[in-house]
Amino acid sequence: MQPLTTKKTLIGLAVAALIFTGGAALAADNCKEPETGTDTVPMLSPPLSEAVIGAGRLQFYSAPDENCAMSGVFVIPKDQLIAYAQTDDGWTSVMYTNPRTNAVVNGWVKSARLKATGTVGPSQ
Image (cartoon, rainbow, N blue to C red):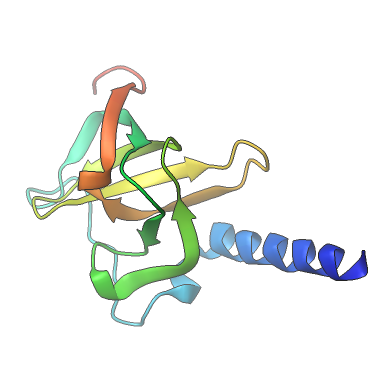
């Protein structure tokens, strides 16, 4: 029983590190998140509720770049995300809240794996 408890503790610490660092500790040095609310990365107003579609894991990235994967951070089909901004080249800035632990992760995912299910709040 002890190894399982230790594994749960390590997983909890990893999730906490992601929450407090925004995943930056796991990203490459050149992975700078772009400024949102610009012409190239417009904000979604209101934010969108999105469901993960397709098969398999949807990887989280610290920036909209294939080289910026957040190791071990992903969502699966039917998970619900909140989308805040999108790039023209197929990336969406999202937030995911784990329904069991309430842990929150912010990052970027590929837009093609998302399906809008509604909005979150009024238009700004």
